Image (tube, rainbow, N blue to C red; front, side, top):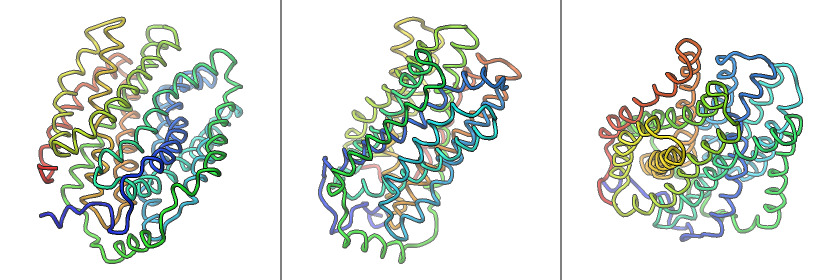
Length: 397
């Protein structure tokens, strides 16, 4: 069995390298700001262009498909030969596409910019996760958490940043968001050498790709299904909390953005706290535990108000999202010869396909109302729990 679940690090790979992981995490942070900000500004786009909920959902669907679902293609490109240029290019394109969304008044042009931004996000992630795997040493989930937490922190603060700009300066000032891409490119120009992977390591990885089996393990398929369901719940909360508090309750848009940010910041904390526990307790065991707790905690979102609601959303986000880096490591160990493809399947395809569920929630909201759409998310953690039990993966560390 050990041979079936190889570590992602080659013999030539470096030990745990915090500096390299932090640089990569910074790019992850910037890239995911643009992906995380889109749901927060959808109510403003909807009002500005008189869109239906279904059309707004299609914009989010376009973002999910281009930024996530096609990531395995970029992962395949990365596996065949390292493409480090995808890191700065991805950040630049992601920022440029999103920042210009405020300028057109035509839905087709906005769709085009959303797709462009999504392609930038898709370009960064597989190469970023693959490169990060070379610097995790023996602490795979912990090291991947350092890289992952940048993305989740970007997601977490994105609604507050975007809504602050839109509500205080006006929607036409959204291009200010481009500054994050430019700052990262400047930082990367200075710190580029710290994330340089030795050519011997890349050649070893390329050789592993050439000799690896092309068969996808059944357990990887089950794991992808689990992550799809987890991501559906994740994206549903992100998207319909703003619609619920802005459109349905006619509440403060900034408060809605703060609730989403609390949910995502809980995920940041969960990633930091949970990944070392997963390395210690076992990756699958921790995934199953997370799904159990998520199933039990979700109903409290509808049972409390005020500060208790903030606490409930934060704790739910902490538990649900804490397995993000864990499932990436699981996929890389189930498919050790194709790290980029494994990362693209897990972070891109699985999460993006889960985001497609937001379109289904949009149809539900159009027919039965936003509150019903939000409450229907309740069944998803339970379905994820049922699937996670069938993953064949070592129970130990």
